[in-house]
Structures are given as C-alpha cells and as structure tokens.
Length: 268
Image (cartoon, rainbow, N blue to C red):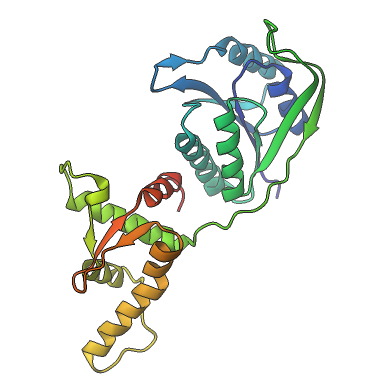
C-alpha cells in the first residue's frame, strides 16, 4: 500500500525555495501557510508570492491538492498546534503518511516551532539555501543554485501519553469547576481526593488485587496515584504543583503544564 506524502510550507519572499521541494518530492497534498500577526493585525506582506507559487504549482502539478491556511508567524504555540492538527487529521486517514516540513521559509519562530513539531511527531525536515542570497532584491531573496539539506535532529522524549491524558482531565475538571470565574489559572486547584475518585471512575487506577479491608484498598489507590501520575507530573516534569497541606492536598497546573496542554491540544 502506497502511503500519502504531505508537505507543509510557509509563505515568504521566495519562489523556487518553496516550489522546488514540492516538484522534487511530488507530494499528494500541500498545506501552504500564509502569515498574519494577531497582536498588530498585520497581514502577509508577501501574499503575491503565495499567488505566484500556487499558480505555478497548479500548472506544473494539476492534480496537486493545495490547502491554504493562516497562522501567526510570531506565535510558537499556535504554529505547533496548527501542525499538530494537520498531522492528526492526515494520520487518522492514513497512519503511515509521511510529512515533510520546509523550514527554510516563513519566520525564525516558524522554523523553531516546526523543528519541535517534527521531533514530537516524527516528521521529515527540508531546508534549502542558495549560492546567492540577496535580501534587498525586489524579487525572491535566494538566487543562484539551490542546495538541499534534510536536517537530522536529536530525538526528544515525549511525555507519556497517559500522563498527558491525566493532565487534560485535570484541566477539564478545573474548567468546569471555575466556569465563569475570573480567578487566575495559577490559583485554580482540584483536591487530591477528588482527582483520585475521578481517575478511579475513569479506569486509570485499576488495581490487580484489592484488599478485603477498604482502608487498605484506598491506600493502594493513593499509592498508585502518587507513583503513576503525581510524582512524574509534579516532581519530574513540573506540570503540576501540589500543596504541602497534610490533609486535603490541592493540585494546581503550572505555567509549564499549561504550555504543554496547548501543544498537545489536538493530539492525545
């Protein structure tokens, strides 16, 4: 079975640097992002290159599907989120599809975010540079001969899938608990005993054997909650913070935890 080949590219003041990898790799589908900056309301200043490149590609590859999307070139999290949405959609349809992300286009933040996304979700990277770079040229900035690279990146250890699921459950509980409440996210908490009950109901804390004495069974549940979820999420990953109360311990999602939740919003 032949798997789909999908390329992700970001608009910039470039022609061949965008179109040549598409012609070379012959993807079944291209996701072509253009820029918008939310904070300033600025639109893509190089939109003419988008039109030139897509018109050229339609002539050269009439069957190529080009999907136009917009993303904030300054928003690291949003860029990763948008890439993750594409990966999720495409891998549901074809689990073996191959992704190629052109990191030689867009902005520096786009390149950084795309590289991180490729680490997280096993994508291939494409980088092109030229024998003549002319940033002041009225046309494309890269001229002369184009040279290809497929950068190899060091793998990153993704957080365990179940840990992210539990983090999402905590987030959902806090959203419901503090609905229409203006309390800062850093001040929102769930009691540990409440989390224990919910995770037990959802099947995250199944015990192989249960004691006849309910007190011992409850202690086993707390031990599993601590070792399997709270210790790695709080002590190791720093996604959670747990109060030092002797009883009724409170669990908070940290700023780092919120960032991770944003990154994995559409995957897991």
